[in-house]
Amino acid sequence: MTLNEAEPANPSLHDPVEAIVRAAESALTVRRRYQFFVWTQSYLSRLVPHQLAVCGCYDRAARELLFDVFNSVSLEPVLMDALADGRSLLMRHLQACWLDARGRPAAVQAAELPFASLGNVRDALLAARFATLLVHGVSRPQRPQEIESFFVFAVQDCAPPDSHMSRLELLIPHVHGAWQRVQAVERDFGGIAPAQAPAAKAGGVTQREREILRWLREGKSNQQIAEQLGISALTVKNHVQKILRKLGAANRTQAVAQAMSLQLLERGPRS
Image (cartoon, rainbow, N blue to C red; front, side):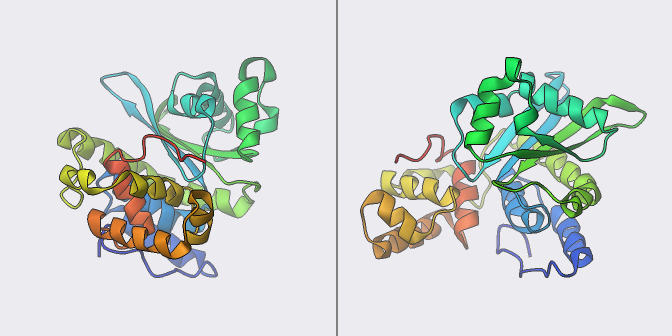
């Protein structure tokens, strides 16, 4: 079974070893960006809960870390810009914190970010209720300053317990391997959407369905979306079913991932 066919059966977190094994095995099937998103939202999020994932990979041509942001909650533009830019003061500070931790997972407190240089970004993190950022990465052997990949995870209103940091340390080789593979495959495809989600499908998604997709990315229920849009929950349900058919998705998570790969969610939801 591949990630683009169905979500896995719920692994019991009472047996984290089994959950880690399943996550590691499923990571081997990840080839495309949308598959990576589905994997993080299913297998990885059960072990390391997060609503924000920032993934960076060293690009040989650009000679720098290039970052991609996956978020299920709205973020202020100043924060999105800082997270997506490997040269931003925020990302450089987070990498320095990780290097200071000698390559171990590190929890960075948003409230402790330097106010003089990161005041606006710090305020945006706190406004989004991301008080703690969990950072980890992979460096070249014997060259800790040369970072090959770097990841940031955060969940609202929650500091990561030691168990989450330990799980991330066990999983980081698989996160790194999957993300590196995604970058290589995406370069080969030239960023073109995979066969399961041809670009032609993008034209069949209406503006209202795109709006609902944006709210699905925020994790809203049918009732919550209905209240936002001033329509009935049944109407939202019908729209969701049409979206699943148009995108060839088995569930909401896959629909959002497909929409991301088709760049249907470039603009944020309108209140």
